[in-house]
Image (cartoon, rainbow, N blue to C red):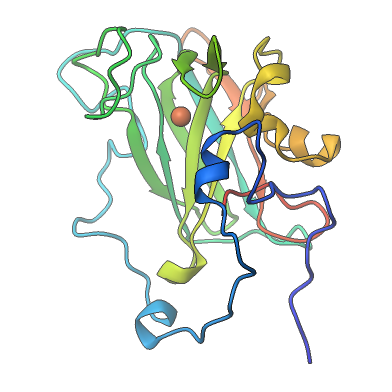
Amino acid sequence: MTTYPRPEPGDQPPLLYPPYAATVRRAPAMPPIPLPHTPSELTGPLFGHHPIGETDSDLTRQHAGDPLGERIIVAGRLLDEDGRPIPHTLVEVWQANAAGRYRHASDNHPAPLDPNFTGAGRTVTDGEGNYRFVTIKPGAYPWRNHPNAWRPAHIHFSLFGPAFATRLVTQMFFPGDSLLPFDPIFNCTADEKARNRLISVFDWETTVPLQALGYRFDIVLRGRDATPMEE
Ligand SMILES: [Fe+2]
């Protein structure tokens, strides 16, 4: 029987990684049971209720004023296991503001919300698999995983794929972040090379003079060079 290639051990985050405390509660205790996909899982795409608007990929232009913080550009390509581009795919991002606060009911971290920053964006890859966001560099924020736990700056990514069942979710980090060696979500991918694929690359070509620093983050969906994904 033909099967999709499986990742090498350590190349993807395990479901259970005790230093990342939430996995202890949510990791399945029994082996998974394969279920056949239903037609609604196989058909699509399902891009939400509204078409993608002009400012959806520019998180700095979604309100009347400019958000606070360091303006950045995050751009890259969506690639398959052979390095071929994956075109016309919905890429969604969400992130904290420059102070490390999410605009979300369950975030009560005592840092200010920014009235000019929602922290959510979306775009569709072009014919060559390219995507590009303009945003604000997110701040680090504390969480309750362990005493004095802080998440390194990161941007959450969702790649929708052709149907709901194919959605993949991951996080992008920033080069040189002092908190990376201490972050269990980053470190739960055991293989160092695989883990480092989650770190974006500072890039002069993506940088816009007098406007914004640029970071490249290519995402490989599967195969030997696959980006680690959250289950
Ligand atoms: Fe986060």
